Length: 438
Image (tube, rainbow, N blue to C red; front, side):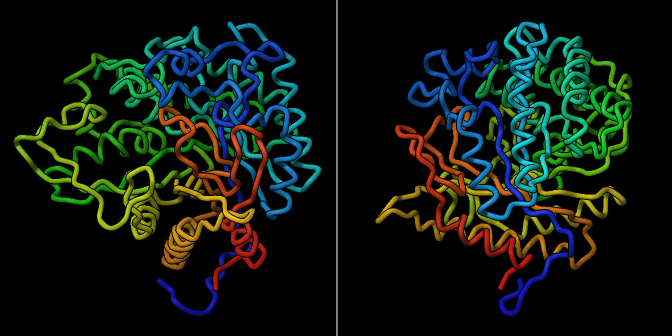
C-alpha cells in the first residue's frame, strides 16, 4: 500500500454514494405505494431486531431535497438509488404518483450536477410476488420498461438487480431476510429466476436505448484450501458471475445445483452488460472440518467451517481486509477480461458516538482510506475500475438488524430525523476534491 505521496485516480473517475429505497424512504403507505415483502417481514414478530420496520426509516421520501443538498456539499459525482417496485406497480397496477417521486429525485440530482444511477431491484419485491415463481422474471421486465420509459431520458446508467445472491440465499435459503423461506431448493430456484429477470430486464433496457446497463453482485473472496474454497466460490461468486458475463453456469456449479433443484439451467438468456457493479465488504476464511454442519446459506457445505475474522472486525462482525478488494478486482479483470468495473458498495458499520456536535468516526475513515488505496493499487495493475460508490450516504434501516448498525457518512437521528455529516463525510469531500489520497 502507498504510504506517502498522493494516490491519484484516473481522470473522470466517478466518486459517489449509494442507498436503497426500503432502507431510507419511509412513506410506506403514501401516494398509492403497496406492501413489499419487507413490509410483511419486518411487521412479523421476531423477524427484525427489536421489531424495527422501514415505515419511516430516514423519511427520505419527504426529505430528499435536503439529502441531495448534502450530496452536493460533499461533491458527489454520482448517486446510486433504488426504485421501489411496489411504489410503481402496487398489486400489479401502474401507480403514476409513485413514479412521480423518482421523477422529482432525478431532476433534483441533475439540477445539482449529480449523475443518477438507478437500481431497479434492491430486495423490496411487491408482497404478492415470489422469486420461486418463474413468472416473476417477466413481471420484472414489464416493470423495467415502465420505469425506463419515464426516467430513461435523464438516467444514463441502469442496474437491474442488487445482490441477487442475498435475495436468493438469505431470503429463501436461511430465511434471515424476507420472505423468510428456509429451503435449499427454493434458494436455487430463486437464484435462477433472478438471473432470468436480469437478462429480460437487460433486453428491455437495450431496446429502450439505455446508455449503460449493469448488475450489482456482492462478491466474497475465499481464503483456504482449494478443497473447500472451490465450492463456496462457486456458490457465492461464479453462480452469478458466469451466467451474467459468459451466459452459462459453470459446470461444477451446475452439477451442485442439480443435487437440490430440478431446473432447466439452459433456459437462461445471455445479454452482455456494460459495467459490472461490485459490492465488497469482507472475505470468507474457510477450513475443512468433518464435524461442521456447514452454512445454511451455502447448501451442500457440510464439512466446511467458517473461521473467525482476523484483527478487529466491524460492528457487523466482518473482517477488515482491504487487500481482499484489490485481489477481487484483479481476479475479475483476469477471469472476465474486457468488463469495466464499478464499486457500487463498500463501507463499514461502527458504533458512532455524537460528542460536541460531531461524530469523530476515525475507524470508518481508516476503513475507507485502506480500501481506496487497495482500489488504486488494482487500477495501477490494470483493473478497469471506473468509480467508487460508498455505502452508505445515510445511516438507515439495516434489514434484519434494524436500526442498530450505522453505515452512513451522514448520521441520522431516528427520533428527530436530523442529519449530521460525520467526520468521514468531510474527509470524503476532500478525497473527491483532489481525486486522490495523501
